[in-house]
Image (cartoon, rainbow, N blue to C red; front, side):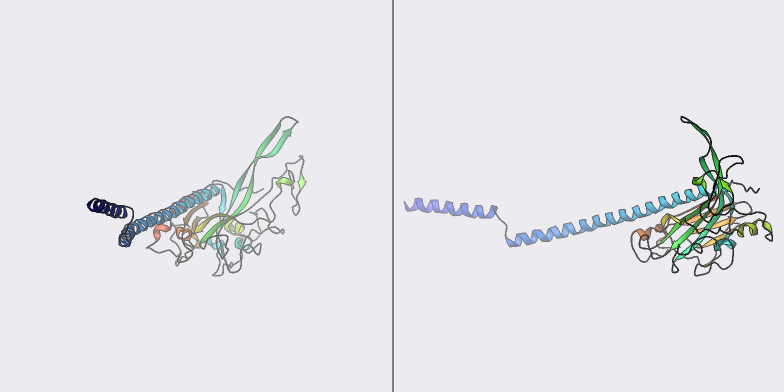
Length: 331
């Protein structure tokens, strides 16, 4: 009997040891597993972080490239109807973005109206021109209860593109480009229904087609202004204050200053003092070459945004040369 009991006790002890071995881990085993997991997962997590960071950087570059190309295409389409383009002699400003001499730059923002740009901001006109603006179906020739006949019209507009750099929290820490435009109204033909617009002696087809506040047509027969350049640069705004505000076309533009004047083709003059946006203008041939440079770094960080040869891949560029196809008409 003793031998039988001893036999069963041995079997039970063996089974209990086996269960203990298969149902748990020792503290040393757990520590070893944690160390191995750390050694394996840490490099993998770093690798994944690098992939995500690289993808974020490439997306920022791609976005800047697309926006720069879209902006330069928009400006090119705008310039195609230009009838006169101002060069840098009409847009010269000093270090505080204040015009250094009288001329067209005294008649447009930021000088007029005051407050468009703060005194501490850079708000420099880079590209200013007159163009013919197309208005579809502006003139009603005849109408009835069922049908109406309309005709298109062209009016003159003064367009200005600015480079703006300030501390506005709504925009990036880099620079941005804004567009300002004022247009003429649609004059009424002799013997047709017309209306008088406040501040203007001419009559217009209706109150919906009055000139923009501050608009005044250029005069090619000014007394004392010899030559087309002097006549166009002698333009002055109407007495009414502007109601239009510059509208931002694109943000994340390089704010790096130009240490020396950019090199322009022979016969053209440069306008602008920032690498992010400048032009080469040929007044005689109504031609402008536009240069833009974005700043993708401003999408990724809030400091150290200056251009250098090391980070140039974050500063996509685009340029285009456009000749205006409009024409000047003076009664």
